[in-house]
Image 1 (cartoon, helix red, strand yellow):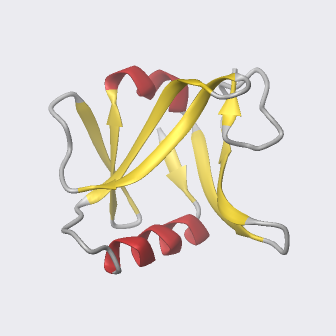
Image 2 (cartoon, one colour):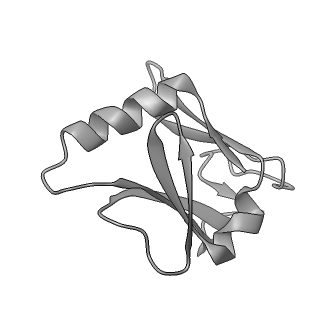
Length: 106
């Protein structure tokens, strides 16, 4: 379903280990909005919600709500560090087009 590169796994594990509150996983959501129609949203989560699918990648639990699953199927999430910016990137085979920011798609 969703893949995390080693760099993304390391970034998430680092965020979890330094979180101020208890965290058991990473919530990934596709929401309406952004400049291309849909946008990705991620955040640390204490527990899955009742309608979440829980998958594990590299020892990290990912919480994906049912509405987002079809949009995220086959997506690879990476963490990239560069001089201009650092952050998560999404390689989504379901996206027909992407915004230049990399956080929005249609």
